[in-house]
Image 1 (tube, rainbow, N blue to C red):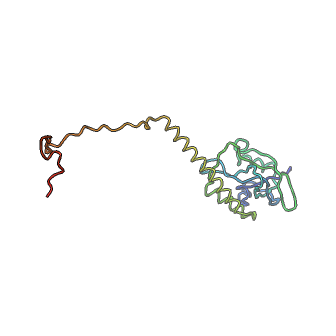
Image 2 (image 1 turned 180 degrees about the vertical axis):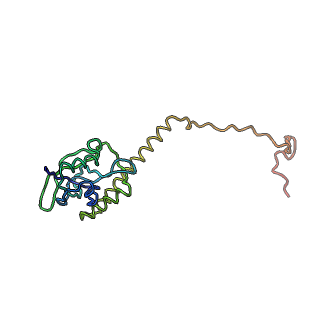
Image 3 (image 1 turned 45 degrees about the horizontal axis):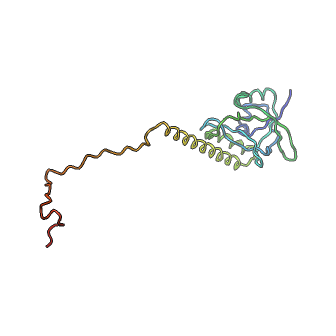
Length: 202
């Protein structure tokens, strides 16, 4: 049976999940992919993990030894080839560099926020493999920042678009009726001695 090395960086770090999905997969080791960053993309509030090139960054990973049957199960889970594609990457293990297959999300997908359940599954996997969860939390925060920044930009563009279609910005002064004196008010005659007076002084 042919074996292949597969790199996990998201929910498939989770030992319990991998045991269910790929019962005969074996943990080969843990390490990092250099010059890549962990990101969360997909649905706005149901994003999944992916990786993208970023100089100077790194992604903590687990390397699994999988069978052809395991790979087929992973293909179905990852939505290959429409949602994720495959490529080989170099992984730095303890004193060893290996080439392994990794799933990367469709590059057209936007940033989003992982669901609490999905985040919890990945977090548990980080602990299973002894990886630094600070990297995970930083990726969630940075992806959230990208998501909200894009959302604000969309709202601004929509506002400007709506403004172009409205005539609300043409100032039209209110119509004021000419002043008419009260019935109790008496019109004064200029011949009245008090007409130009400031009133009676005592």
